[in-house]
Length: 279
Image 1: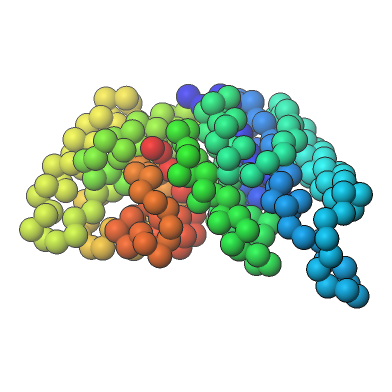
Image 2: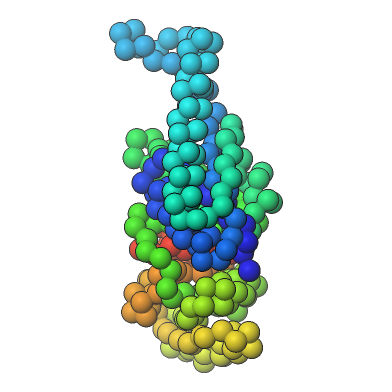
């Protein structure tokens, strides 16, 4: 069962949703929560701009001032997060780091069991390429489960896990079963066949997954379906009233326009519920 949760805090609306989701899960799992804010060192690597003269040269004093301002902003965000956690009765520690956010999160993930991030960070509208995004880049480096929060989320009351017989989906199933049992929630096990001819195989995979869940005394329902996998996952999630999707992440590239075949990438990008990615 998850007892340590790490959340990335950057002040964006997506980060706020991730914070609230992480606090709720920590309270329900009796888990420790760590909030991390990473001062993005790339913000200090670009030329400074003077309003009248355009781009100016490197100014150490100005850079030091910017660094101090970014540090103070990070400290404020962490204090706000600590106050929200305290109100919920959740123990929380905070950490302020400097560097490239995705790499820093990858470096420190070993001290947690679950990483919670917003789908879109602080630069999503003004400069989407500056992060690349942090969530996408972190997923490429992640060896811990990562919970990606959408723009809006509600407390988890029912979980859907997608299984396809692959090793990563097997790990996703085990994570989903453990979480459902820890939260005392029902689990929906979904297997999607892309063609009618593939349905018998999907049903067999679904049955095997259901047997595993039941062996762990998990209240699970099994649903095989036919369709395009990613839209079908989102459709069945809505139909069954699930508010968390658990999927295996294969870690192939994570550049959205090249992931036509990646169910996880499409559900993360377009889904309306949080997605727990398990490598």
